[in-house]
Image 1 (cartoon, one colour):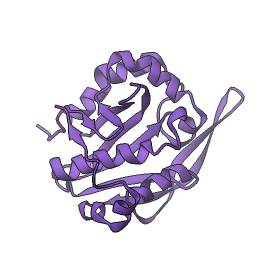
Image 2: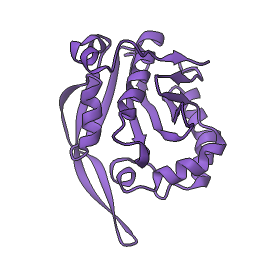
Image 3: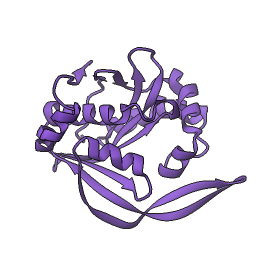
Image 4: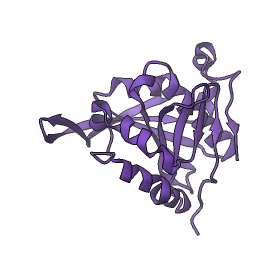
Length: 211
């Protein structure tokens, strides 16, 4: 049997990252009906409530059980509002390496929620699960995602040429074009950088597991 992540939840200063539930479906569908989500992700379009329910019911549990990764829905402690979605994928258990992707709801952008969620997952991976490498891949035009990678201490390793599809709507038609990807990495020692301590992304507010 393939190694797999445990079903768990991660708590940070402002956020709870937990497994998806079927009653998240309406909120997920509304969050994904966004031009930036369409443009920068490979999520289905349209992202329907039916698909969101299937993701919670079977697709995400199978993704975890088969050792490919894990999917977290992100909510705000204070209001319980849906903040985003975080996924680990392409997990290599021998190398103890995995890739992270993230979506932030339109209302929550600019609040520092994406770096907080990604950093919480990184801390959990390195300190609780013994992982040694986390990768992020950001489309060349996605400056917001690149800022997240920089804020958590990610190191840019280079460009994967013509490695992604960027989407946009033109009337009723979804148009696609090719894009470069910037490859970022985060190692356990990167979380100890002085820049993270100074900027407040690491130190007083640690993740807390909620098994």
